[in-house]
Amino acid sequence: MDPRRPYAFFVEDEHAAAGRVEPVATIFLTNRECPFRCLMCDLWRHTTDETVAPGMIPAQIDHALERLPPARHVKLYNSGNFFDRRAIPPADHAAIAERVRGFETVIVENHPRLCGADVLRFRDRLAGRLEVALGLETAHPAVLERLNKRMTLDDFTRAVTFLRNEDIDVRVFILLRPPFLTDEEGIVWALRSIRFAFDAGAGCCAVVPTRGDTGLMPRLARQGLFAPPSMRAIETVLEAGLRMGRGRVFMDLWDLERFYDCARCGPARRARLHTMNLTQQVTPPVACACRDHEA
Image 1 (cartoon, rainbow, N blue to C red):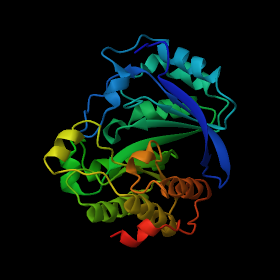
Image 2: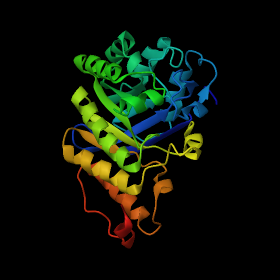
Image 3: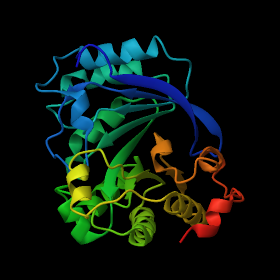
Image 4: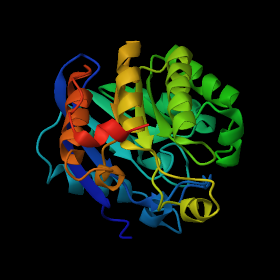
């Protein structure tokens, strides 16, 4: 990995907190590997072995922003935790804040156990609002422990409470059907996790269908301990999450084709999910003969 370049960057539309569909720039920063090493994670593929030198992260942001179209919000994702001092040097925070001063919202990802004074200092440098994305993954206590997330549900709740008390917005990543759950259990626990996140104070939940080629997933699949969620599960969770009316709920559609169980209706079902992400409204399901056989 080149520490002078982000490993990806793009602009896409998102339903913003204000209720409008607005362009959001996402910059995937290259930096040191996350120390937490969660069971299902493959983001280490995009990391370095050592802490990047001061000035490299601002240079990566410059590289992306010079090539991206205008956007109102920016996500600075770094395959780990923005406030891990070995990943993003705190000495770069001022320069980073200067580069993103034109954005209304700056969204960074972070581990719940790393939410402290560094977050507040960075918030105070920003011209716009800070939003911190936390990985809850699941509210199932036993599964959470087995994911090696190295946090408890209490750790998560404390982090959200801390951030909200400091007027920092929170979005939450939730896995749909992590290992050790059936498809139906995956639906139930994804919805319980969404409720748990909103109860804690989150304003937005992003649900991520668990993929089978990340981390230790292939080994768990061979052992019969993991299978990816069905398209029915993906649709059911987004529909039910939106109907809660508690806050924004998104379904991650990256590489969704791998979850298609019908070549005829798969693309139309993806388009429906995309529409629901943007409108935050449930739309009628796609008709297809294959649905007569769904469990």
